[in-house]
Image (cartoon, rainbow, N blue to C red):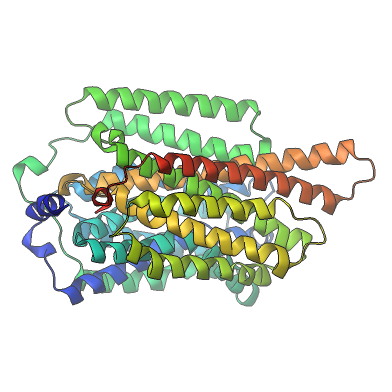
Length: 491
């Protein structure tokens, strides 16, 4: 453990060795940026009906408001991570560029007067988010290496990663109901600009000005293969949510994406200057952390899907009340990630937190799978939310720390990008699988049960989707069991 910390500290430039006050101020800037990205994943979703009414486009075109962002974000994450690792750019500059670009794209999105302009601006948002997300996490990883401080810093990151989506639903409901949908996008502008101004003052440069740390050229072929593969998989997931998993387009996209990613893996193993060094992913602990992250985010995004429809369609909640109903999940997540996980992480193996966390979240999904049309919020949904919040926080904090641990300064950005890619694919895959299962089950129930009412059929679909969400989370528990018991692996 001591050797690991010494190795990382020996690679850090003097500018990273800040005072305690400076590092914690920098953490606030990073946390604000990460919260903004997490919010943007869901804050627009709840406003989609209002956006569609305002800009007058069809139901079929509605997906592009979300897909334009997620495709650019997911497809360019590895490039963003490598830019952050570049000696010429540096993490501080990459972070500030990401914030300012994200703010400008958000302002353009909010002012859009047509679907084409809005979708294009959302794609630009995704481009800058792909730079910002891995840069923020890599800054966190290299600034906090002492075990207890690292646990606290990643506790905050884990709280944001696990609860940001739920907070986005609440914020989207408030802004849409009391202002208008454009403020779901405008809200990013002041947040990003304030974080950029503060970050300029307190963030370290975090560059390693040595010849061996810089890469002489970018692996362009690897970038094309990785980006096209990620875009194809993410887009396949978004299409599966509406067309079903067996649709021809979905199968072609999944197949093409898998082929591109397979060729990318082969390319990275052969080239001398890989975009994503294979040892980062093939490392047993780090690879397990990436897979656990994918499964955890897949499960929690699936829970958002099930809960959003149960609250609004079955219980008849308004968007604002539905957003407020997610608060217990966010609160339980925040408490575990900031109070419990930081105390346990330096003392125990990551799997001591992660395995029970996965199982608790799976139990929450199991509760959701037993609900019917007469469900009450306090007796049925609230217990499930608390279990989900407690469980996912117990997974995300150690996974984020483990996924960026024992990485040299020159690869901190790309390791962070790989973790963010796992989150992006997990969210897309979870939403696609659970929405497809829910839709197919509802349709089958309506055709097979002559006396079935639509709310009853919908609830049956949501219950089945919750079972599949629990499968995601139990699979995560199995993967977490493979993580070595030595606690120093996470530090």
